[in-house]
Image (cartoon, rainbow, N blue to C red):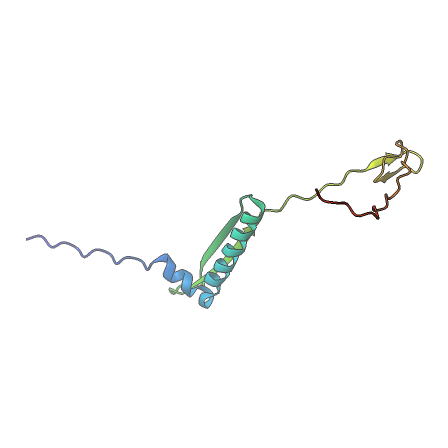
Length: 121
């Protein structure tokens, strides 16, 4: 009769660690950042990313089984398109101006409203 060795126990699910890291602060931060990123993506139509970096180190060099786990969350949200303005170069002042200095201004006037009543047919 052959005795089969017992299988090694499964590691705990990642989600369990995520809820426990920094007493749930990492999970809350990721939840908030994901919502903000999704909103920004909808607003701009451009993609963004969230990167989670997890560092695991032994707590002491002398041995033991204690571990220190730290995390860094990096969000790259898309930026919206910035508006542009149209200017003309004014050679006289060597500056940028909103109205074309080479085009003369027309003497425009406001037309008064008619004072007579119009009849309907």
